Image (cartoon, rainbow, N blue to C red; front, side, top):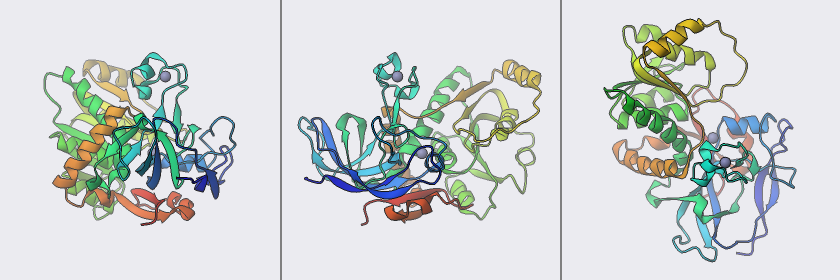
Length: 364
Ligand SMILES: [Zn+2]
Ligand SMILES: [Zn+2]
């Protein structure tokens, strides 16, 4: 392929609403690399913050950042030394890359647990992202996806976050003599709904909380996943679950005050995992002695979790394949709007029932 430039989205980090369509260079294919045609890119709050000028850093020597980190791509060309890929394979590039110091965590493939904080992330900081027609990447930082998952594999990256957060918390809960049975998920966005699916498929009773009515898309998907849905604006969590405690809770709303409400609904030996970075500075009066007492006297565990390692991506691919069979047609329903590359900023517009907006980079 002799392409030197292609169409992409560029933002100027630090400058609000700077997203524009522009021509971006296509690197020549190096040894051990794949040439990828970008098919779809999922959009999330991180992309919104990058375009709002609140977050993001361009690669060294460049003044713009190509956003987009939740992607599905197709292999179009194979670099020298790559043996296990063929053109036409579907691939999801990993977002985070090891720090240059190659700290002990990064050296063990756990860049998600990087000790220096100098890691780079595609489309977020230090590395160009996927909102462009073509890109090259190292074959060892790309995860293979079966072609049968074409319609929902753009969810692999957000699910990798859930595989780590929920999967590791379930592992941590092996400390409890009784396996967790009942779970609470606060927030029915993509992370919350994927967490509900994961917990259901691990056999837990799942309650999902949001502030949308029972006939909303979010509520419908939660129920179709086998969860019990609570509309917190109609019946509060506290009323809907009176006399009930949870063995595991996942905070996926990104609204910090909710974490304390979830905490107060935890039972003995239970765990709460936080997945959302909360915006703003909400002040709350908390009886910290009570929080301390409950955590100690009830053996409770509070976990924070970010990003994902390679094995979380492969677990996500395996679960998506399983759920596609088990919940026919459900996963594509999480994709609530589709936008062409030229209209990327439309995908940033929030709608109350929107779950996952997707940019279709390659028009079918
Ligand atoms: Zn994201
Ligand atoms: Zn590191």
